[in-house]
Structure formats: structure tokens, C-alpha cells
Figure 1 (cartoon, rainbow, N blue to C red):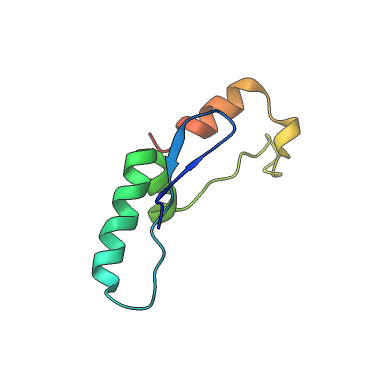
Figure 2 (cartoon, rainbow, N blue to C red):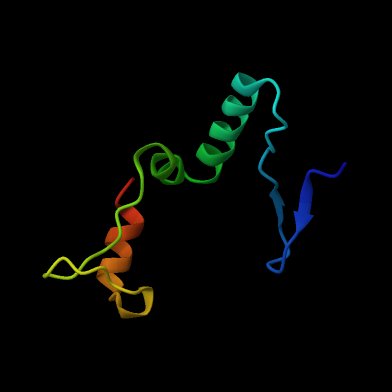
Length: 79
């Protein structure tokens, strides 16, 4: 089975390991390595959770209403 796929940006990306119900500790190490290899902040989101950007009143902002600084802050939140 091929473990890579060619995407629209014309580069290869590795598919995440799929848990088959056996050898959980092995799969856990592989999925953690997958996320860490892609972006360490992504693994932090898995373990800690995601904090959605909010306005000054505490109301969640829709993605299209977030300004560039808020997008940057959100992206760098877990770095």
C-alpha cells in the first residue's frame, strides 16, 4: 500500500497512521510523531485543546471576521 499521495501543490504528504484496534501504544507513538513532524503546535492542540478567538465581549469570532493579527495570534498560540 502506498503511504504517500500527490496533492494539488505537487508535493507528497504522508498519510496519518490509522488505529486498527490493536497495539495502541505503538499507534499512539506513531500518531504523535506524525503530528509533531507536521507541526508541534498541532500536537499541542491534540493534547491541550484549541482556544477559539473571541472578541472583547467574549463572543467567538467567525473565521472570516478575524483580522490578520488575530489569525497570527491564533496560529502561534501553541508554539
